[in-house]
Image 1 (cartoon, rainbow, N blue to C red):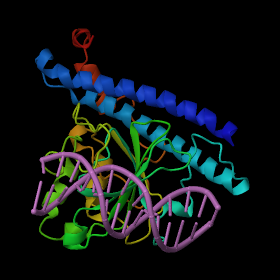
Image 2: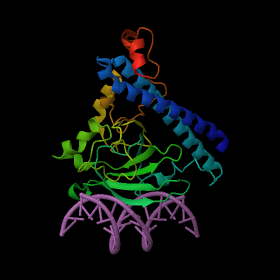
Image 3: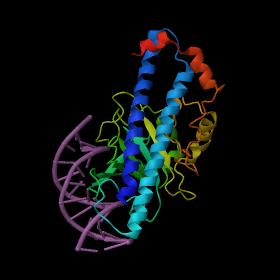
Image 4: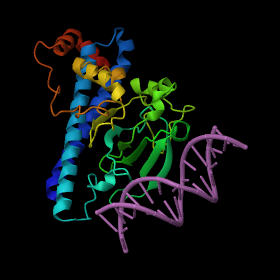
Length: 294
DNA sequence: GAAATTTGACCAGA
DNA sequence: TCTGGTCAAATTTC
């Protein structure tokens, strides 16, 4: 089994490296407009965002493949000696009530705009990092049954595998704005309470203010488990327009959608000749501008 | 002092 | 019996 998954892990690392480079490029670009004395061309933003998006999807697809392989292998022959493979599809992945969760992968941050209260932590076999258990802070105030489980990835410690269980019923009343507002635009520095992220033992994206990525997949979603179906329209619109201006990157992508948003290669390679992106790039890029980046 | 976090214990499922 | 999930008392932080 390890034979089948190790190359995937290597590929994941390579893609992650490429992604880091793209992030760095984006950070550099973000610092340039003032120096260049002109507004950042959207085409360049689009390109960097496209690169990041492709990397995210590739990583998500690879991760999915790794976990599928692990699951299949365990069905055939349980082997506890796989350091980089974790139990991800067994019944234990589900909530105690047998419910199924929505899994989200996040980089650098485990924040999602909701206010969570940590109620448990558990060392997990085959995992270097403990698993954290959170419930909605409004559980007692509003009877909100939403829970989430956060696991730091062994392969890429900057990635948090977050699984959501239950629905946020706390968002249906007057405090919906308070709760959901940070979801729309979240650069990771959005505080959830008194400027402090709830239950974040690891450095979040506060340092650079960037919500680096979020890939998501519907682990197994049944009707009524859609955590944020009220965001579906917004997500669809963003996906259609495919204008990945960073501020508009929705944290909720995929969480409440019936299908994974990162369909393989979907929208990854749409910088064709005559495409606006290329037009913008060719129109705005210059050697002078590039020299500023060095 | 209140709220949040930590952590050991307990419980349930495989 | 082992492992993951949750509880709840103790501890920490604000």
